[in-house]
Image 1 (cartoon, rainbow, N blue to C red):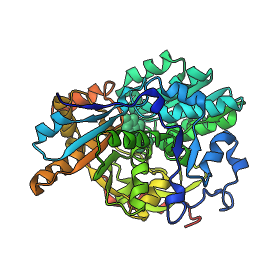
Image 2: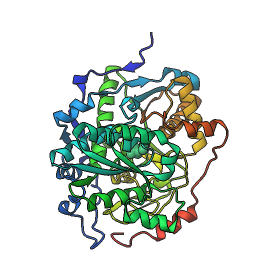
Image 3: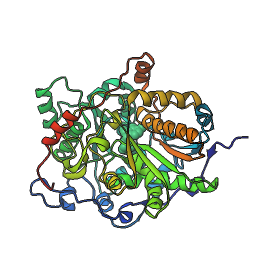
Length: 452
Ligand SMILES: Cc1ncc(COP(=O)(O)O)c(C=O)c1O
């Protein structure tokens, strides 16, 4: 009988998160205060984030203890299975061994609650009553509403308008867990109203939704802001994925040659890849690939420099690969991969050659998703499909070279709320789009002239 699922017991769940920073040659550059170009003080950042999370954000320690109360919630669905994708291997006629870490088994359907639960917990501990956030694909907004419901916090979500229209059932899910949700730009904030006045038909963007959520947090008492990706603490929280995967590989006496994840802000990729990146930094030969859409080519065509994390320039300046904070991406379906920037830790990993970015066309991602759904059964989120496309490329390469490589990827979420985009793909209505270099250069000309 095939041994497909490699399972850990609940009591084998990792009890510490990994911090990649001590393993880098150079720590990531500090966040800067746009008003004076100086490093941002924790006190200033504490207006929107609780101290517990800010301490993790700045921590130099390689390991951070996971509080028992968080582990108790995570074991609702963790440890997640590491699955050997025998049927996909057969479909691709590859000698490669393909494994995926199935993060789609969480209540909202993705990796996002790994950090949502932690963030809601630290806010609750400091007496915060309400959290605001943005969401692209809707996975993050659902995850935070799930977590806020658990710890008794109110929650408001600003969802990028085009995704709000494409995925109406994410709204229902968010309402079911008791949170509020508005399409962004909305009439609820100054940032939203200003953008609507200039362009009433805008599809919205993650940058705009972040501006709205930050403004809302600053303007309301006892309210903080929560970000679903990009920041160091978010990436630390996600490392539970790769730490579990390492234990699971030990059980089958295997280890990956190739590690793959899709990159929006970078959190699911980091979650799987960072624990393996430590081995790479220590000299082990592992290929680590982060995939992104050609329609939002932050890592492959963006510039590594200081930029705002949001459109209305309310966040600190962050040194990262960026397409410019006023980048409005085309309405491709992988809503969660449409952010103009990326985590500073991902940018640092690219700079130190610990990973390689790769752009994927939308139709190639959908084709890979269909191959996966018809072999392994689960329907992937369009974001996840960008990782699967790389896995298919590498599995075919292994076949052509006759090499038995071990490949692992992060199955970051299911696509049950993305079926409208599958309908469009199956009807032949989805086309490839490559974001033009001229537009990137135009946006980069508007970058802040600070800290460059
Ligand atoms: C299923 C899924 N995968 C990946 C992503 C990309 O985000 P990140 O790069 O932070 O993992 C998202 C974001 O919404 C998502 O919903």
